[in-house]
Amino acid sequence: MTDRGIRSSLRYLFADFIGEDDDTPPSLPDGLPEVVTAVAGDAVDPLIDYQGTSYAQLYVSRLRRFIGRNGVDDAMFAEIARLMAARMSYEDPIRIAQLKLAELGMASGAGRFLRDPQIPDR
Image 1 (cartoon, rainbow, N blue to C red):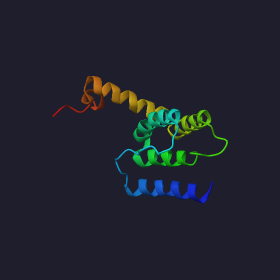
Image 2 (cartoon, one colour):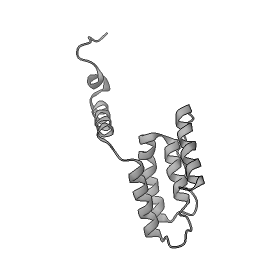
Image 3 (cartoon, rainbow, N blue to C red):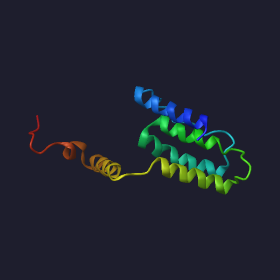
């Protein structure tokens, strides 16, 4: 890992610890091929949902490394963007359960699923 990669990872880590997470979604860098823009655009929202906007910004920053790089064509770049998004946002069993509960809560009223049946309503 390069010094720049270590610095960006540490920057993300410290921002997460001290709560400096800007809620503005990151913009994709100029110079991305159209096919990569589609892949990266689809990846940003799940990354924000998974870890926050600073984590999505880290993804976008990592993509910048491949813009204009020799030997990396559009198809390879799109695959790099897809794989990087998948590795950065895997859904573990707890995350899947959270998403399912959120869906149920939206459909049926969150209180019904989040309320403890042993505690009477007030």
